[in-house]
Length: 133
Image (cartoon, rainbow, N blue to C red; front, side, top):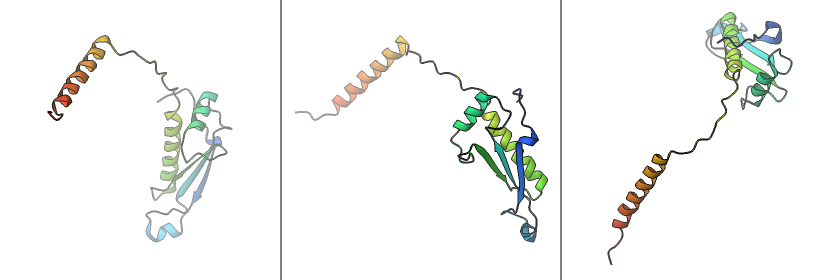
């Protein structure tokens, strides 16, 4: 998806931390997990995209408007870095296009009649179930 904007690597802060997942004894020695921090306000994204990103109800976005992504699926740091960037791009692209405006429509005359017919039929069915005096 090309949206006319890119995220510069200089706008992303990457830290390597110790992973929690697979890796055996290696997991205790090597910092293979990646913490990616992306300051939405300070980024070069268009203003409308920034506001939609900040409006997301995503618990990865802090109160200060920083999107934090932790990637630790892979055993290698490079793979986790790639994974984190991919997730960042996914989140940004999800709000890249403005939502379509919903224009309310009126039900057609035929659908209104059909609905009333169904109501009448159901009403008669239920009346037939009542006790006979």
